[in-house]
Amino acid sequence: MPISPNSPCRGSEEAVRRTTDEDGRELCLYPRYREQLPGGRGYSVIDQIPDGEADDFGPVAVPQGHLFVMGDNRDDSRDSRYPVEQEGVGLLPVENVLGEALIGFWSTDGSAEWLKPWTWFSAARWNRIGGTY
Image (cartoon, rainbow, N blue to C red; front, side, top):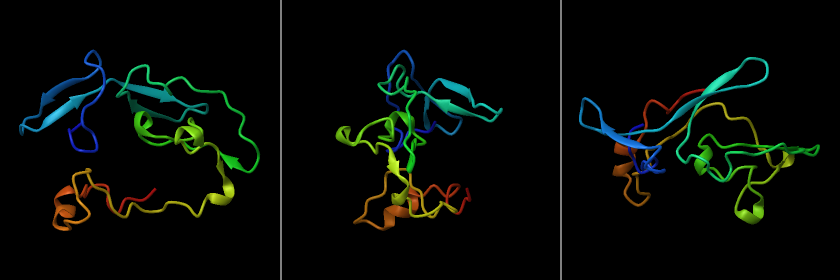
């Protein structure tokens, strides 16, 4: 994974290794695992923080009218695995859902500054902009 303000290459030294690519850009190497869901669907996940506090979670009963939501960056997401008292989302009431995501409007690597609009373009992750879900 390229090192950026969004991905600063954090984690234990035993699990994370730094290297460079053929263009001299710094990369961070993380362990990657394949998760398989019931029904056959699966996906790859990286583990920035081995044995992180929310790595082993569940089961949980989700009451009717609520959703369990999980962030796409599990080691950095304060999603439904964390209660509101721990600055998490908790179980999300369905009434709080405004709509369905259809398109990725804007994405940056984290280096942009709001008060410096010219930095928005060098920080843009162009391959993620305009993508559909």
